[in-house]
Image 1 (tube, rainbow, N blue to C red):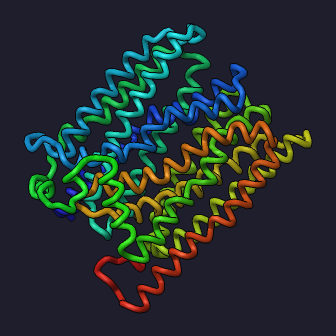
Image 2 (spheres, rainbow, N blue to C red):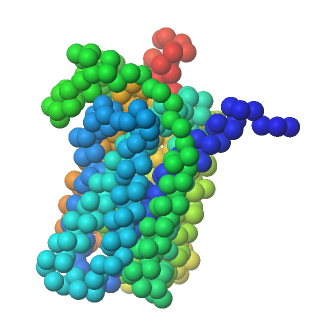
Length: 441
């Protein structure tokens, strides 16, 4: 039986989204997974490792230029496709340049500054590509296949983490810095092939949207964007409840982010063990989690999936409290158990991420896709990023066990916004039935 044209279009779109999210995950994987481990092995303190969270700032503030991505774009090459092409190819050039950077001379202040700026630029390109890719996904996916698109987003980005984080750590044991980064550049270039072949559909006329006085892209100033989006959240109780979920969703991740990988180093794992069994196996578990998360959204619905997966994610954090207790009490724990507990944390995180991104996409208006999606994601990233830098100092002050215990208790309290959203969506569903907005799910 020959596949229909619609099935072929969906398959082509899925391949495109997978390739783009894989490409942006490569450098992010290096900076979030490999770099903290390398720094810890060089004797850098937890407080200083937490300070490297500044590199992820573009992902937290990308909403500042998201209205520009909505507003400006090439009609000839595709509105969002033109942004993706520029950012992808620029990333390839920057990764190639970094391959020839004298990494062994980072003790020199001016070289360290140049290295930091280069990584910051790389993240800025990735964040901008993400804005355009998310907008393209909002326009191209329908309500019935959003969870599949977001599953591929998680799988693609996690695969980027595997290569950019785990494989790079593994390769640095036997391959030099130059060839490792040339490989990253080649992979980003390879993942640019689908977008080079893709023909973007025409979207709603941006000129007409700019002429509307209440359009979020009519004025690209930060003040206007915040004001317009605040009104969007406040106009419906479900959106207002969802706003508080966005604020609370990444609190525990931000507080524990710089602590978990250094804890594994202090537990005695080597670079190769962390690179292969922690980062790579963890990312592989996340691939399975993305599939399970998508199936959970399909069969449980968005409401129950969000609540259940949030509880499972919190349980995985409690497992790290156990590892911290073993470390501080100097109790031996078999590496296999460390690998399993870490893999479960990545599994549950991916399951939760799929349902969160599906809801973010559901609450994004198609005519303002880049702005709406980016602002919601930026709310979570700002919270996580702000707490990321703070966490290193608190971890040094309190110690692993006490600090992670406090985070776990805070996580229990922060289940309340999710329960409130859950109740609001159920209340609206009972009152109004199956609404066109589908907010009850």
